[in-house]
Length: 138
View 1 (tube, helix red, strand yellow):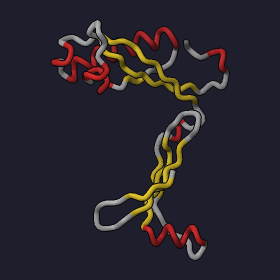
View 2 (cartoon, rainbow, N blue to C red; view 1 turned 135 degrees about the horizontal axis):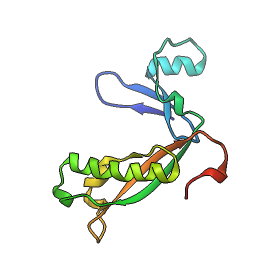
View 3 (cartoon, rainbow, N blue to C red; view 1 turned 135 degrees about the vertical axis):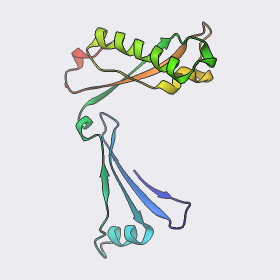
View 4 (cartoon, rainbow, N blue to C red; view 1 turned 30 degrees about the vertical axis):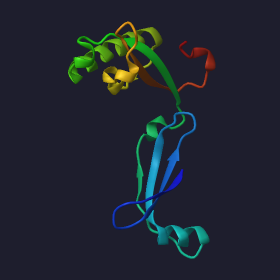
């Protein structure tokens, strides 16, 4: 993705490279508009810093599950209570599927994610390094 970042003193162009399977943004660079224009037109080479992250996840497959999580005290729960409830469900999912599931903790306190029975729908993400579709959890 290439986008123009506005605000601040200098207008920038941001370049992000994302892996298609894992949906992980693993490289990011920022250039001034002048650097970008010169590089794109072939007029010069722009020396830039590229930040990398999540390289170990590139080539893996991102799995997403949504689970109902019972959070004590509901919307009045502390972040610690919500995190503990999510971690409990993540541990159960790991036993069931063999994958390490990472919860989106903020879902457990978001009133838009609250169900009629008082539970919260929380998204959990895992990364699968195998390429076999038959091994995916349902």
